[in-house]
Length: 253
Image (tube, rainbow, N blue to C red):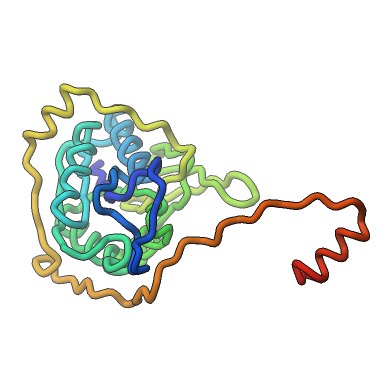
């Protein structure tokens, strides 16, 4: 089984996100970037499937500017066999939108012919949670989203997925799309020897034009604003005062 793992370069989850002064987007200059946490989980699961003898090759793919290669090298240092970089100058948090990403990934899938695409359920910069579902629709493949457990079963997969009511188990035939949730695994740290080896590995480069995909954004961001600061609560003496404040100050009743 060959596994394709899309990984995205995002603002590190430990960084406090700041909006640009002109409101045009999120500040990324001189900000620590890293692999999207959900994609890191997907990469770890693909590596575990290979280590268990259920997969023969793990291929990481990233779409974005040249610095996305750093994310790909992290994926290879963790254990991915090789990497593909789809180079574009478009901002991946605003300009390169889910449908365009799904179309680019479809083109990569048609080239690579993987048996499984294992990807994060969403990216923490735009929180769209759309790309995996769109890719499944474009390819006509079965999908299992929000996976908290993945098991190989009779040439297919049995996926335990997290839903509002609890856990649900679904069976999918390969080829398939699986998107990962937080509780699927705990990603490993890349060892120093593997980091050094990953730096020497070649990365295949492609472009949207080469893949025949138009990536122009369909939505325009008018303005980005930080959420209003939360105000402190007040102590009330009794129910009557509470009702008065809810009516006169909060205006909710």
